[in-house]
Length: 308
Ligand code: NAD
Image (cartoon, rainbow, N blue to C red; front, side, top):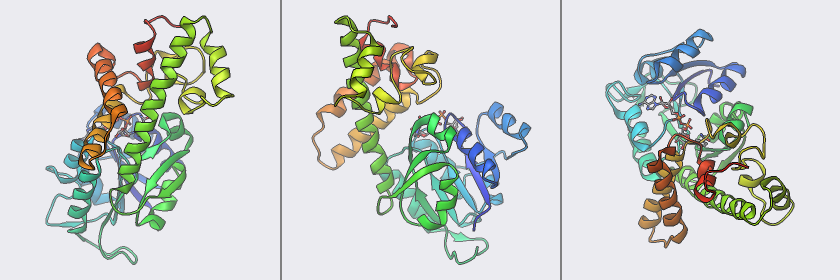
């Protein structure tokens, strides 16, 4: 039902998601504060706009894929943001795929539901915000194989999500998609730390990372960090560890997600021993100058800087 899709945030994930929307035949309009990346898209024939508000003026649906809560809040409610104007907006559906805290999602969702539509689209009476964070990383974003954690308005959003992802799961009311995403990334951070520590220890005990990876991947230690996103340089092709940890999911974003998990755990009165350990390690990684490197470079934290 929706054809005109706006997209804001053309980074490691967003740029690949836009490519899949374009391939699927949607009319896409993009915006990013980085002019170089905007230029790359205009050269490919995709329309670019100077502000989120201008994107909203052209779009029935707007997707945001931004670093953190403050960026998303700014793009929605800042000067020339998506909700700029007299409480009346063009897009019927606003989808945020960034990983942010459920509280911010719920605040924005209320601000969106307080707006009206400038023109009614089909049977939509009011604009609606859908939190649809993703899992799968840049390779899945490129292959159109992301997993979306979504809630209401799901059926209308489904064709758009399916052009960028393989799986979408309904997680419940507003903010539950964000909560699911934060819990997923906590599990992923801890399993990446465990895999990295095991592979570093294995090498100190004289087993090569390639051999130990084969063992893990056919044994109970197997996980996404060992069999799809191995952290040791040279063990697996096409993953960030094999290109000096460039591209992928920045350590500073993992540190942000662990802070989101810590804040949510505190709010829920939940004890969280592993969150604080993982937080400390990623904080140190960032302080040591690895903040833009992929989060799998945590292997270096355990393994004295020598590659296999
Ligand atoms: P990124 O830093 O590569 O990209 C973010 C983009 O947003 C950049 O191009 C930046 O210029 C743009 N931006 C920042 N502020 C802006 C603003 N105010 N207006 C317009 N554009 C703005 O980040 P990424 O790796 O693409 O991740 C985006 C989100 O997706 C994050 O919340 C991250 O936690 C989540 N995520 C990332 C991965 C991954 O593997 N990279 C996987 C799943 C989820």
